Length: 499
Ligand code: PHE
Ligand code: NA
Image (cartoon, rainbow, N blue to C red):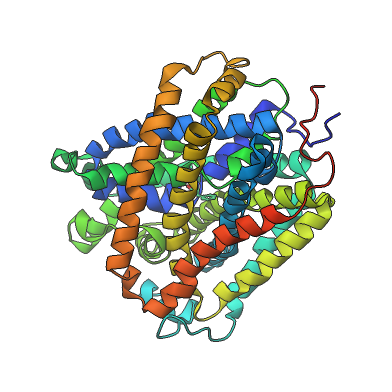
């Protein structure tokens, strides 16, 4: 008997997987990455990365979780007793991400409220760093807790953990079934408004104009792969965990294609919306579009407030809708990240879901307060950069090398996926995961090491980067081995028989 919780419907699972994939990265990362790496020409490496790495890896993670029916630690332990650490490592990476991701959602909540009355005034940059975040002068200082960040942060945790307490079907699935359609509708409102603004065409032109001269540069291809790994939430234990709740019969391959294309569709939509809005702003300021392009925190919390203030009408409402989109996109991703360690704790230590949510979520909520202090932004920035560069890329590399090269499991997994999918995986899948993906990830990994050893990220002091960046990335692996060292209760590693 298998008493693992299950999704209510296939659509529910897809909604949750898409909810995890569609996050802040779609809205503030993709448009800038595409623009900087060739605009319209970027779609070639991007599509290539989806077909050779994104979808194959998604199929792999769906198949692993489905076949071994466990959280990432349990799945990798069942795959082979010696690889459990890999599951915990990915869980630890997700744990770190959850602590600061929650804080960004809290900012977006504040800004949804600030939009009414354009609380950021004439200088949104000064408002964000000064009035709102009360940022300290130098990285490494902590300062005191900032109440205006702390209060929405509490709300974020209450919502996320509230959903998780309710379980897989009544909590995660139900929340995604509301949040994702709401996100799509609200985001469409923003996009339609953006493309009908003066100057929108100029922005779209800049976004789609192909710059083929970059196409031969390795960095463009690395950017495409990097975007895809991050964007599809691969290598974080998330997709393994979510697919462990699938019913016995389900089309895994098809699920992966749907998830990947839904995520890319949202990225494209965001690119259109963001660049239309940037074109409008460039025209208002009488400058070229290239002068106003940014991504990340600056785009969402400095440039967008500027744009919103220049809207001809309904500024407060439209601004609020934009930030609510960030909140919804972020929350559904946050929920998926937290579920990785909730599931891991439950599987290994045989505690109830409620206990796992309370302990895992509680600890990460407490740690997240560090990022709600006056020094929080610097810690957040360093942790985010390092956990991504040395988390996903290295853990993803380890995953494919272990599964394809060390354990040689591709054939067995392929049979599992093919046995219930309309589309057969064929040689394409094995070649992508056995050859292309490890080489691309290996190359990215080496480049990352060289670049970060040569130059300190953002010019931050070495000591600061040692404990916030390198230290955190290394700690995630160590935690992986420590948790793998605990003993499983008798019978835990047996695969539940088919029901
Ligand atoms: N896939 C999410 C995005 O595109 C990011 C994310 C990363 C979500 C890690 C969960 C975990 O924004
Ligand atoms: Na994404």
